[in-house]
Amino acid sequence: MKLKQIVVFCASSPGFGNSFVDAAKALGKAFVDRDIQLVYGGGRVGLMGAVADSVMEHGGVVVGVIPQFLNSKEIGHSGITQLIEVDTMHERKAKMNALCDGIIALPGGFGTMEELFEMITWAQLGLHKKPVGILNVDGFYDHLIQFIQQMVDTGLLKVENQKMLQYADNIDELIDLMEQYEAPPVPKWLNIERS
Image (cartoon, rainbow, N blue to C red; front, side):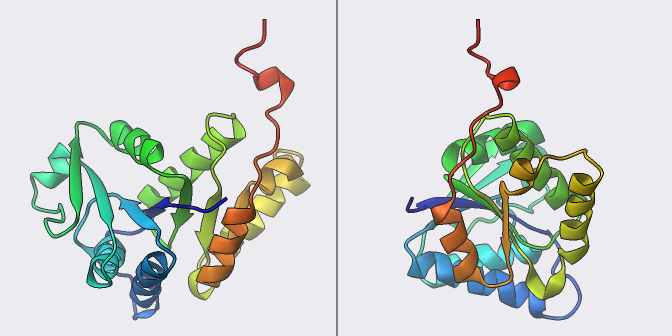
């Protein structure tokens, strides 16, 4: 499946050193090269600003979704294709999900983790069938990947659900994995339409 719009979750900080910012910029360029539109949290700072600026600089399309309380603090990015203002953080995630056909997490903090895990949980529950991927920049997500394996090893996560999360340290490899992704069938006990 050709991905046309991908949500990127990432930090509103740049992190230490240049590797995370460089990866965000490279991801933005790769989106434009592959004719993928960026959907993101609408910020102009940190990795969020870096990926958005890169897409814009290379002639791509960027749609930001930001809650009013953040936009009012002048964190919103005024130089992107479209900035959509919503009322709440939950509305933000729901809108971003509605606008995309795939999700990528760059390095980030609590907010990025919360967004990533909500999207993979929605996939596990069958609320969407979109690929969810992690760009593992400089091994940032190594410990999380190991922890997810521990969830499987202790019987708290099924292998088929573990496989729903794609990851790679190379942008093109990650997008290729995501475009080949096929969602597993929803377990019978989760089928909302059952009688």
